[in-house]
Length: 59
Ligand SMILES: [Zn+2]
Image 1 (tube, helix red, strand yellow):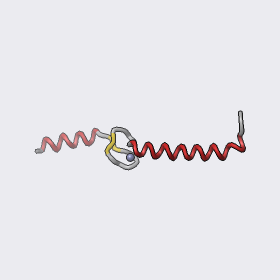
Image 2 (tube, protein in one colour):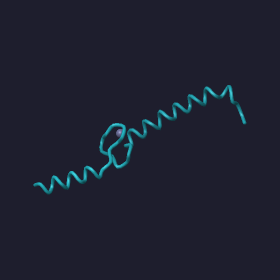
Image 3 (cartoon, rainbow, N blue to C red):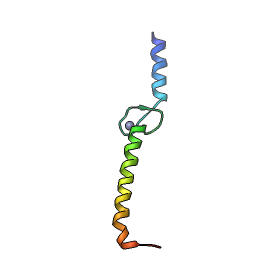
């Protein structure tokens, strides 16, 4: 039915999609990608921390 399609379309437009993998998600970034990003950020932070340790030291 046409009505059903319209409703589906509306719902589809209302729903967010992950800005990373473009999959339907309740949030801007789905949990899988969030996890991935968090892991990468942690890795990066760890890297920076490691590199800066010798040079900045304690405050
Ligand atoms: Zn995603």
